[in-house]
Length: 357
Image (cartoon, rainbow, N blue to C red; front, side, top):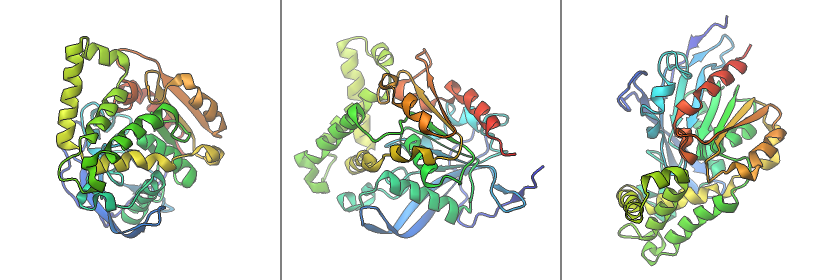
């Protein structure tokens, strides 16, 4: 049996992150990367990366961390969403797939999201124009420089985090034992996926109230971006059930937008949508060494299975396979990734298959 040794974490700020249910109380902290240089050529003197952890890291006799799990969130979100009964309550408790008494679970707020550095902190349109490659690099630096994690048992993510997972596999092919991208495709953003983002981008940037990022109040163009998000997030069956009449449809979208206008920021939204411009793992899929299990859902209208892209491209991943969850009463379109009850059995099997010898 592998001998495991506790790892000291020099940069962790211990604090309660959220009420824990059947899993240990999360801790949270910040890591500041000095003079972070973005692929755009811009530099941020201090890039703050916020993170949460559950459990404790362990090293083997050779000093390699063997139980780290990185989980990454979607566009416009943050790691905080994972601390709810539908997600953490299904994954992190005793005997569950990512039992926090066994694994060291790391959840990072990506650049531009959550409590990490983002445009709405003050720079707005003067914030560096980050991309997915920058986001993955910053996450890697947090793990290695701050948390001392030199290896991951599993890297997985949802939506944007799923796309980051593909990039992790190519950029750091020897870093992990296994990869699980959810609700994503291993190709450049294109087709309808690009267009819905472009609609939101144009609505904000072309709004006179945007004022080049110097807006006094949230520009009305943010409303359009929020409407597109509502439209693409869930499957049509659920939307029809929620809004079976004209009046109920209007009420549903109006309520969603009204709430979003109170909680979202136009600069953060614009930057988050534009960040996907450099995402294109397709040319290097053969470079992914770790076993990879991609999971999408049949009712995801952002990544619809009828395109055949996932089924075609997964064949190029040396140890890759893909699953498309069929439409059911429990699937939630693109947001099916938020409900581990739909896919945690596959995670359990995959972890067993990829257990290091």
